[in-house]
Length: 77
Image 1 (cartoon, rainbow, N blue to C red):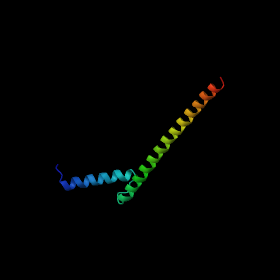
Image 2: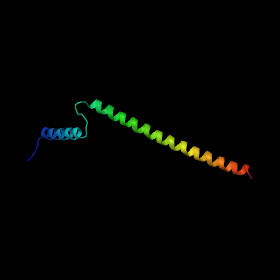
Image 3: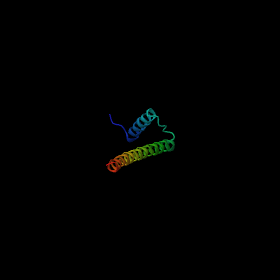
Image 4: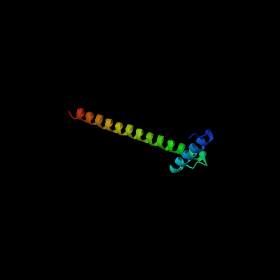
């Protein structure tokens, strides 16, 4: 059984639309979906930045505390 290009395109289009709708993406408003994805990316990058800055801050506190401990040990000799 052979299908025409138009039939194949219609089948693929219907399959893609069903898949996107199952994922919760409205295929009638693609610009809104793009905005949603942009928001998710911004949220992810800001979350990564907060994690990175938190790690840097924690390391700074630990290193400062360690250096302070060493300094006190040297001063009390």
